Amino acid sequence: MAIQQGNSEPWKPRPPFCWQHKPTLDLIRQAFDASNTVSSAICTYTGLTEIASDNGSLSFTTTHAWVAYKTGLSPRTVQDRTKDLVSIGLLKFSVPPGVKVPGRYELIFPADAQPLPDDKQSLPDDAQPLPNVRQRAKYSALPSLEENKELKNKRREEPSPSDDSQMTNSLPIELQPLPPRIKKAFAPPSIDQVKLHAAKIGLAEIEAQKFFNYYESNGWRVGRNPMKSWPASLAKWKDNVNSYATYQRINQRGPDRNAGTYNATNDHNALQSKVR
Image (cartoon, rainbow, N blue to C red):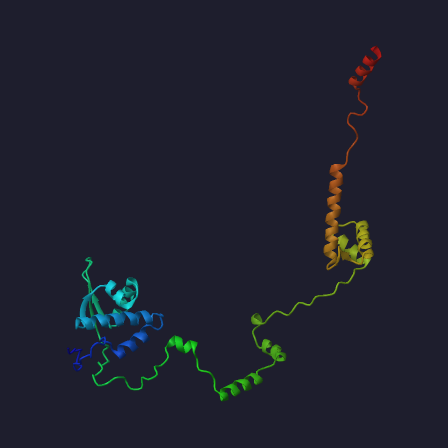
């Protein structure tokens, strides 16, 4: 059976092959490569071409379920790929609105593609197809020996770590990294420094002397660890002194308020003992 498509010459596919078109397959690969749906699009197209060859016409009526059976895909996937094939101009699809009946399909060849003649088995220079987008990203070509040597020479010419300061100075101030913090070693204070700071925070001089004597005797250590900041320890000392004074004021007991008053109960008990 001859098939007429546009202005092209009629051609007759050789049974029992499906009515597939290599330029159409290449167009599908290019169109669906970015969305990672090439396999399902080609499966849908293959199922449609098989049904078209079975019906002997590029225009036929079938259902999504039958196409799904032919392709091994789900009906929903077939429906999605059918819409995509229609959008790129490789398929026409129509169905009466509001009625659950089989849809009308029509395969379309690309405008710039010609059907393959009977005596031609392959396209020129198609023994090795070009890699697609994902393949080019995943399997990039390895560098040659000369390219490897050039890369090694470039790495040797790169600035050494000692030149980092020069590279940093060339950056704007807001982009330059902060200088590393230098930890200062602890230096024990003198008694005059302790008294001066105690006067600033409102601590009595006698307490400052106690603070100095206590930590001077234990080597300026807080528990088992060396002291890091004596002004902070002096502030903590002041808090402890205030807390202890408050505790003493609350728990201090005054004189008995009943001392020196007449106790009639004791006299009554004494008289009863005499009568007996």
